[in-house]
Length: 229
Length: 229
View 1 (cartoon, chains in turn yellow, blue):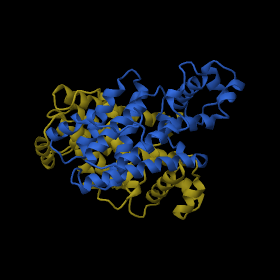
View 2 (view 1 turned 180 degrees about the horizontal axis):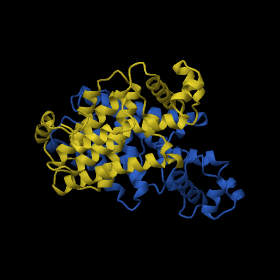
View 3 (view 1 turned 120 degrees about the vertical axis):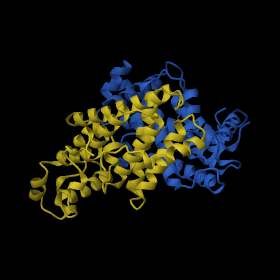
C-alpha cells in the first residue's frame, strides 16, 4: 500500500537499504562517521577516511566530492525520513500520546539500527556552520512537527501542561542520549532500546497512570507510523 | 550546620554569590557566556567580550589571563559544587529515588538560577580540547557518582532494570535540555523548571505508580541535599 508519504520517503536521496554490504560508499560512510565521532568532523581528513576504508583518496573522491558531501549523506540518511514521518504523524488523527510513542519507537529503532556513529552530527555544534544551513533548517522542520504533536497532546489533556518548546528540546536530547549510548555500546538491541526510550519519554510527559500507559504502549503493534514497511 | 561537605563547597574557587552585582568579573562572565552561546567558544574573541562589557582589553586581562580562564571559571561555577553534592548524595543512605530526585531539583535550580548561558559548555564538543582535560575528568566524576546512585535504585527495585550508563547519559541530556531551554527563555522560573525536570526523570525511570511518585516528591521539602543552605 503506497501512500503519498511512502512515495516521498522512497524519493529520499539516501537510504541505507540501497547499499549492498560491500558497497564502497557504505564502507566510507561507516568509517567516516566513526572518525567524526572519535576526532570531531573538523579534525578528520579525507586522507584518514580513505585509509580507514583501505582505499586511495582518488577512489574516495570518485564516490563523494569532498568531506562535506560525506557529512551531508549522513544527515540525509538520519534525517530525511524522520522529517516526513514526523510531519505525517503530527497531521494524523487519534491520541497524540499514542502517535508520539509510535513515532519515537520508529525513529529510535531506525537511528539505532544504522551501523553509523551519529553522535558528532547531533551533539556537536556542527550544524552552526553556514554551509550546513539546509540541514539545520531540516532539523528545525522536524522540531516544528514535534511541537505541533505535543501541543495536541497538551490540549487533549494527555500530556502535562508545559511549554511545548521545552518538551521538544527534551525529546531531541533523549534521542541524542540514545545515539550517544548506541555509539558507546553498538552491541545493544535497537528494538529494545527504542521501546524503552519511547516509554521513558511518555512516562515523563503523560498525565496517565502507568496502567493506562502500558495499555497505550501495548497497542503499538497494531498501529503503523512508518512508511518504511 | 556546617558539615564536611559544606566546607568543601565553601572551598570552591568560584561561587556566584561571591560577586557584587556590578563586579566587573561578574559582567565579563555573563557577556562571555552569551557570546560563546551565540557564536561558539572558538569564534569568540576577548576583543568582542571586552566590547560587550564596555571595557578595554587590558582591563579584561586584569581580571582573566585569557579566554580559556573565562571558560574555566564558567565550568567551575557550574560544575564544582555539583560534583561534591552528587558524590555526597551517592554515598548517603535512604531511598535512591528520593536522593536522585532531590539532587536533580538542587542541580537544575542551581544551574538555571545562574545568569549565564551554559549551552556552549555542555552541548558543544568543547570538552574534547586537551587543555580542558581537567574539566572533562571532573564531569566524568559527576557521571560516576550518578551511575552509582542509579545502580542503588535498580538494586532496590525502585528504578527500571536498565544499564546505569544509559540512565546516566539520559540524566545528563535532560539536564542539557533544561540548560538549552533556559538560555532560550531566561524569564522562566528556575524553581518550577527544576521541580518539573526532576519529576520528568523520576517518572521515566521509576517502577513506581504515579501516586507513590507524588508522595516521594512531596517529601522533598523535609529533606536536604544541598550544602548551599
